Image (cartoon, rainbow, N blue to C red):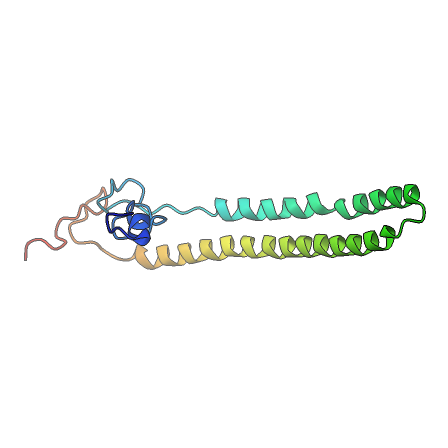
Length: 149
């Protein structure tokens, strides 16, 4: 980075003046003109992943309890058992907190997908009646846009 290029400039390199995540519309060749493609797939996959974590963490609390019982049975009168109980309780709270967060996140991610799809349809519907100058049967050709007067 000794050439005077800032970190933000490096991030914006892929999309010109746009941030790295912007990308170009599909089929545009980087020069504009294509259709921007959107899918709710990533949102729904993320929701499925969060839901999977809820399921995966489900038996952990019981497994921790069984391991603690086995340890307590073999430890006799060790003074560390009281501390182990405190640690166990702390982990049980953390496991439940993680499951609750994942449950919440699952619903929120699915809601984003649904809302975004609704917004996309509303915007598409708003443009359906717009006539583009110079557009033939094949769609907007760009003729007449910023051209002859």
